[in-house]
Length: 64
Image (cartoon, rainbow, N blue to C red; front, side, top):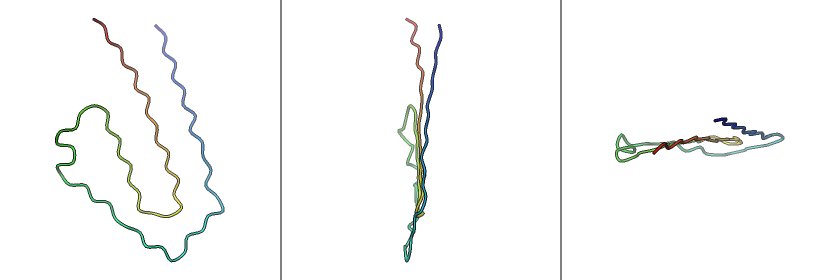
């Protein structure tokens, strides 16, 4: 069995300007993952002019 995964994540952030901005804050309670299962992805940002890229490849093989 051959598995090929390819992910090209490309982005450009340029010539941006942020003036007189107020940034927030991220709060995660200690129970946030209490009943979570599987693949979990959390991205938090409180800044300005930020480029965030997230990607996930999950290969699952089920053999009866």
